[in-house]
Image 1 (tube, rainbow, N blue to C red):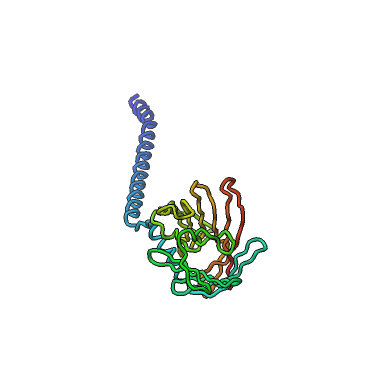
Image 2: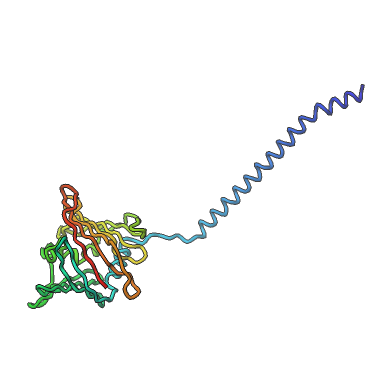
Length: 257
């Protein structure tokens, strides 16, 4: 009788023993998981603290790089402005921070100097040298939508500039900036520019009139390699009808090797 009672008690306690073992095993697994999670979190925190922070450059720094990129090239090339059937050939020379567009019929040259604080655009003809300023900047170059102000790249010096963010144009990473003129002397109330992050090259520019409407768009279509450096091959210039937002005309600035 006693043996039967002992056997019965042991049998009754056996299921509870299995439950206890499973509970202990589960607690051990959960504890191990928590330890692993804490360890991973500590590794992540240490990595984040140790990794150097890559801050975006300021708008001022980006514009400075863009100006230097425009000024440091040394080339002597042929180019043309093409609008439908109209072609205006020119010779493009760049040396020592001076860019010169030389036209014929009539003979004329536009010379651009990019300084540290401002740009200077001059017209050179048989009568001498004339510095372009004031209302002259609104005049069109050889009856194309391109104005003297556009060639002078005055917007690269505007003090009211802010970095909007980064973007991508034709797989190239670019900075997007919004620029505002210091007064109302410009034809544009604001200009939005996209510059390549790696080189500082201008990839796109949009000019807005004083009613806040898009008036003109410049965009690099293709580039070419000349003497180991990438250089503009074709740029599209679109004059926009502000009332409708539709393209009014397209002009192409093309550079040949």
